[in-house]
Image (cartoon, rainbow, N blue to C red; front, side, top):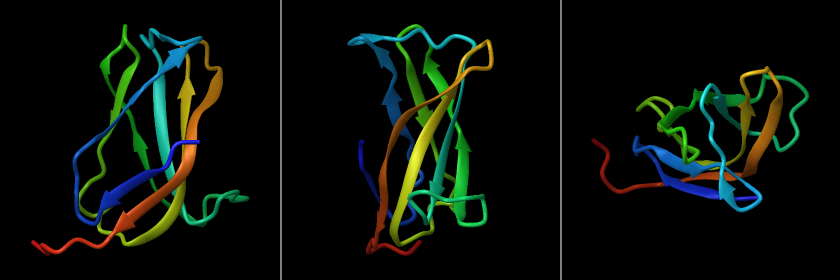
Length: 109
């Protein structure tokens, strides 16, 4: 479980590194989704705050980023998230999960 804390309004990308047995996993042909929700174990999507599609930065070294839009990042509070990976054969695996917190910033522009 890896927790993420962001400042309200920040749209920089969160970068994650996917590994297997301690070595980077080649994620060529894979897709990734990061879902933020108000509930730790939601029964459906009604409590979902937003969902991001990952952008692969370096497939061979398993590096993926998720960048929220300004609207998505306009949050304050505690949420939960997970990252789901789908390989080229359509097999899904949750590779990260934890708390996702937005804290108030000072600059409001």
